[in-house]
Image (cartoon, rainbow over all chains, first blue to last red; front, side, top):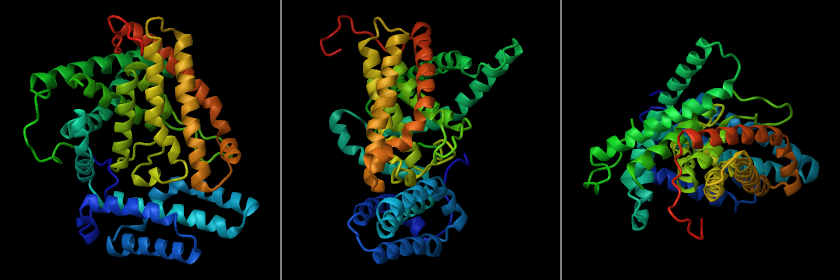
Length: 212
Length: 188
């Protein structure tokens, strides 16, 4: 699957443990809101960019692609502050958000999906008290990734069948047959999992190998 | 939770992802175009019920956070969770849970009207109640300014609530997933 935002490069940032990167990102999110000076906020952004482009050697294009969706919001925010407060507050707010988004993009681009899923499973360990098994979270994520192309296939098949019977337009008319089909499928998959012992207590197994 | 429930949860996480692949309808003057993705929130709640619906959307967000560009417009990764519109994302599992709860409570006499109520309250009110204050705090703008900015999404959301309700009623007839308790406990 080429769907992930991961950019394979051999760098120290890529090799750093996923849990550490996520922890630092969370710390940065808190710390940035304590920063009130423009110069400091700008310095942090420069440091994050240096880390992403310089140390992790990510293509600028990859970072820009992840920042682009937030761009209109930032412009709007800046415009709002220019009108209602002052340019200093506006620049600070935009700098903070931009820094966070770039930092998050660096983490996303340097960490494999499987590693992040392993962190999620690790974070979910305390939930075992509530009867939630972390390994099953990995299973659900793996199933989700498998279901996505499958649903798209089924949708295309139903659309063709409806077109063959002369139905045009009616784009939402396919939702009900599609849902019933995939619900049946999920039901069968659940039974198949039980038949293979998925509902039995999990044997001690290293997580992280489950996602495709 | 049985394996079947896990499969249902994964299924609606995937459905939400596929809905995000549909081309968004751009609205002039608004940074984010109207997308079919919140239809997934509404469908998950009204087909699966509160617990599984909420977990389906939570799964979807985890997969997005893990770096899959599954949000409409091919967005994904951790960046979207710290952006000014992140409050809307965080509201999705809660919205699906609320829709599911309202659906379960009315499941015996479930019809288009009840489905509409569930989707309007959970799929619109809850999402805006969380999304607007988040934008306001994060972007340091007033609540009313943040609210005005999101007003133009309402027509699209009403259409989606309508579609979700019609589909939910039809799916309940054809393939009911929510199990009714033998005797309804007081809590519903």
